[in-house]
Image 1 (tube, rainbow, N blue to C red):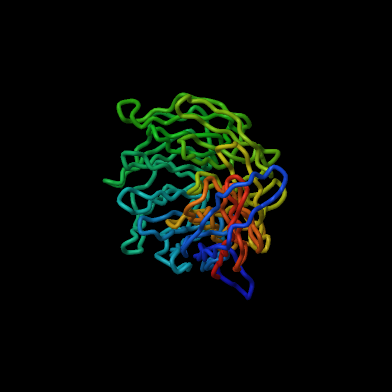
Image 2 (cartoon, rainbow, N blue to C red):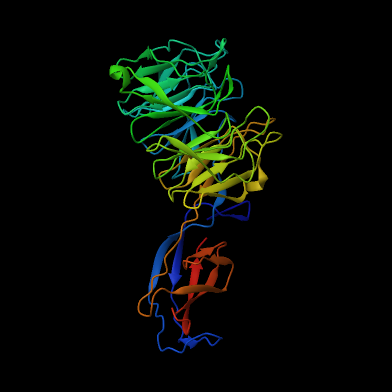
Length: 455
């Protein structure tokens, strides 16, 4: 936890010291309670890591306001954000989560937006195509970022200029680029980049339909799921698989499937079980709240819970606890300040809250940091580009160490500002000392412990 402008801001992981102060067991007498000599004994002091409940904190700002940029976690643990709007930006910045600050790094040779950025197996970053000042209908240029030097070098050019395309790292280390749009409209072509020689090869096979503003997701089976988007035939509710091993290693598209509700500007997230969640998007008339899940084993889609707010141009990230965080976006009329969390176990979305100061954001990016926090970067509200960055701390339980007595224990908050969930986890909401009552399994006795959270 940290304080900003004399106000407590909850967000970073805090260290809580549990000072176990055991009081004599006291009988709890109420209807249905059974008399028993069993009691709970808690001993010793314990340091544990505790994070507050699903909260955001402001962190170091970007040097340049931007939206529609690419943001990627490097092998060094730093976060690289590149280009974006505010014109066609060439600047790039690095975020250090230990110091919570952004520093500038080498600039692109060509400023661009609506490009893609892919972390290669050698640790370099490939930035491909997008809109540039010289090629507003889609550039063929590509560049490589070297984290060891902080510099960009040009690499081989694509065979076709494009933006609103996708780029996916294949198991071979090569990069697949699909679809996008250029001066002639949406495309059904694909290319593969070979980092060994810096060249692009057009895939002989083409997608079944033209697509831009779609998603492409690497599956555990080595295939790429391409879903949604918009094309000459309209907004797509179809998906297809790219198989890198098909056609003697040249790659093929096939196994088309459909899901409920054509969409573009949506998100796709690989869940912990290997399934893929697509969420929200736009259908040319409204922002969508529907979500669908793709099962690679069955090659089929199924519906799941709906968002509490329809949204597109949002961000979506898989948290360390297996849930999915969706932030911001546009509801069809204005940018959103809200965020939601999807629980794959129940198939439901929970509206958790809003960003600090109710800032409304779309066109931003979210990156999961090595410490499990989510870093939200940039974005805009259709009038203003943001330099702001925020850190999201996941609702992570702490265990209360106990010896003796009968398990399972039940817990109740005796005093203080916080929450105790049904599993017995105490969630402090402010820097405070609170008391948690630990009740024996049969409800006949309890001990009280003091929980001290240090700001």
